[in-house]
Length: 259
Image (cartoon, one colour):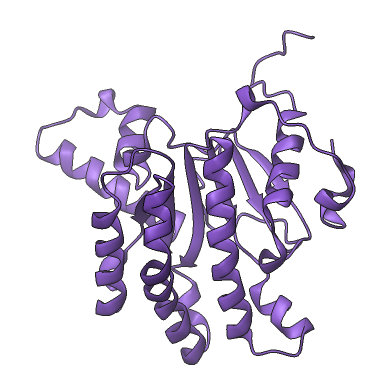
């Protein structure tokens, strides 16, 4: 295991050889550190968000080239509305700028856009940009680039419980028949099946918490925390995180064949 992942970019200190047969099907990333990256350079926070958007473009193509099936990026949480108004307004414009400039490259790389979250609460211009990107890439059948936009896992679970409860109230579902698949199907990741649960969750910038992200879905995900701030995250960093993932023995609560 790469013990130095919490100290510096692992890509700087190791030669990587990935097993193409063991690439994680679904990678989820908490993209953290844009503001601190900007502050360290005496730049406004929005400069970090802008650079972070460029990182999304590079990492999305790198993940697609590696054979990842789903890349889920935590773009804006239900709690991020608490940030200063100017910063929130800028963050709401980012998807517009991103999709306006990057959709042709996504199509060229056969990447399909999907968005999960309470998108009906977003500004009208952001909603339109999201709808257009989904429509423009719907024929692509390669990697799914899934943005969590105005997303919070606790809210998602509450909404899912409400949907299940309504099915019970309507006589469509018996309480005794509620199982894990029932819950999976009620969550926002349902369209990603069979890859709705991440194999690997990465958080950048040194923070080691989940921050209300995919709480149900990451029950058996491998967690990777790196000190690399999101604007500095590269294709090589992604490969290093995957190499660490491939070094682990995933037992899903059972015993390894080696034991």
